[in-house]
Length: 601
Ligand code: M6R
Image (cartoon, rainbow, N blue to C red; front, top):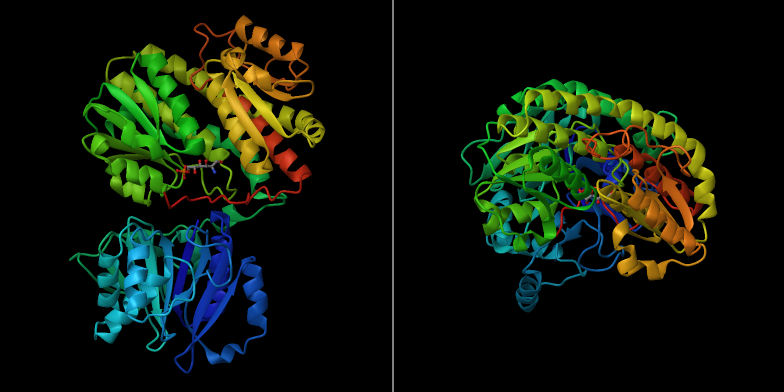
């Protein structure tokens, strides 16, 4: 989603801005722009509805000696106003001196725009963010300092967002945020603001995360104003540069799919022992609970479904998933533990859900890949899922990390609550420890078997995914992957629901992917679709189209439930979605309309 960068550097501002915007490309965007202060106190503004590379090309025609090291930049993911150059950020005021980049939504934008227009301001775009430039312009005209002008402007805007303002006349840059990520860092070569630490690259050794009410100016040293008396903590920045490269892979998704077995082993090494002896839960210092609600969106919600099932199966603990954007409808008691599951920790729907009256009395445990995120700061405790950087917009390895981390938390908490004894936690962990091998085996089979299957689906308008029991959530995840990458419809159903309606969709050649974790009932459902001519792709044991399920098959397991269900089934479905998307000419790392970090509701 929208990305913000800003610099006040002794180096070249355009080079820094373009490089750091490139580092934010993975978040997803549809237009891009920069504004750089000129030596004469004006600004050069370049915008494009294409990629960052287009700005780099435009810059080649500019005499860079005319430019200073002061500038701001933005990748836009359209909300208000279509995708066009005039709607791309930075936006300016009527004087052309105030430049603004903004990430978020201004809920009272229409009202503000009407007031500003009737006061004589001229707007040159359709986007809500432009009102900020004109509000700052008014504040400056009344004699306010730039930092105060931004503070007062934020007070007049309803909604959440991060804002950076550059006054090209003075060369000052200030930033502030409300319920949206914005980080600042200082180095011997200058100071920088960004919506995501990836933008800083190797340039800085530490950073600070702005809190609501902070206003910071890029200066040496950084100048903090705003309503808070203290500064945010300084966090060490560990540059993950080598991790971000493709290392010979054609795309990030391919690399991230491949990383899953090793990642699973690392996670189990890290949390395994503390899960079985309960110390993982004790270290969180959270109170006892008698219900669980897992709040999330998309893939994280699917991972939450598996974790909720683990609470129910192993501890007979009532546990449900709550779609974050629908959380206002959830009825929760104060003794409900809310687990907020989010890769980015910046998902606006989740942050808003936690603000709801119905969740306000509950303790919140965040399971997130970003320990510096807004969610991590809001939660009462956090457990990192430590998947490393995931660049592909489609979640793959973070899903596996969330499932394993979440199940480890569940086992640990249930043990401490006296709902699962030590022998049982040990045996669950033994099962979990098979997972890295099962994932590796599934990966090998998927890479071999899936590409020709994907090629056969090139003309299929859509795909049905089925599962039973623990397999249903995996079918959901498979369908989600397929639709986001291929732009074809894909729906999942509990296989038993077929004959209650969806079976009408099945005709000669309809592709149906079945997560076949074994048992006679799913065999019956497979027979039902086969009898109607479906193009069946089963993911199961020996004899399946994709024989990728090992220990997770129901038959060899006593209670028919592996700690994570058939987790290894997700790999062939990731590979299927990626292969078909490539066959269709899609960009698998940056699917259309989607963003990695969904910071608007
Ligand atoms: O950062 P989060 O985990 O909170 O994001 C939630 C969803 O937006 C995300 O999982 C999305 O569904 C994935 N791109 C799907 O692959």
